[in-house]
Amino acid sequence: MFTRSTNSPQETAALAARVAEKLPAGTVLCFEGDLGAGKTLFVQNLAKALGVKGEVTSPTFNLMNIYEDGELPLVHFDLYRLESESELDEIGFYEYSYAPDGLVLIEWADKFPDNLPEDYILLKIERGNGEDERQLTFSARGDAEAVLKELEKSC
Ligand code: ADP
Ligand code: MG
Image (tube, rainbow, N blue to C red):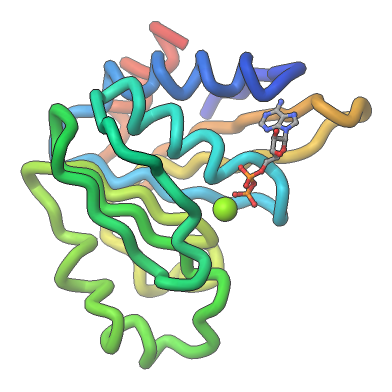
């Protein structure tokens, strides 16, 4: 586990770009953090760093977006509005969260801890004292330690 602090959206964006470079295909990145923590901002900048051209929007209402014009296909979920586990099946969560050739990014993953893929990087974003201060804590679940080590080295 390791933590990085940022003091502006720009610093978080720069961190997301460095993370993007180090995630091998097949990685799942799960986000935990309150509304306004910076989960979507992180995803937007990760996508940009991977060459996604179009606008990356928050999938709060449509639950999932897929971006296929970057270096890797990106699947972006936001589980905020889901109320029960059974809805995961309905939105195709199990199907689309298995993307060995792409990256899977899941906001509000901690709502369904028992239904996540086995191996993933967990990124917890917390507010600090100042308005624009954030603490980003990265940890590995399952077999994701090697990826975590690479992230720690370059972030
Ligand atoms: P979430 O998806 O977690 O609900 P968003 O990414 O949509 O949050 O929004 C984060 C908001 O917080 C943005 O308005 C962003 O400008 C602001 N912000 C302020 N400081 C930071 C920071 N250090 N890192 C990320 N976002 C920040
Ligand atoms: Mg969001």
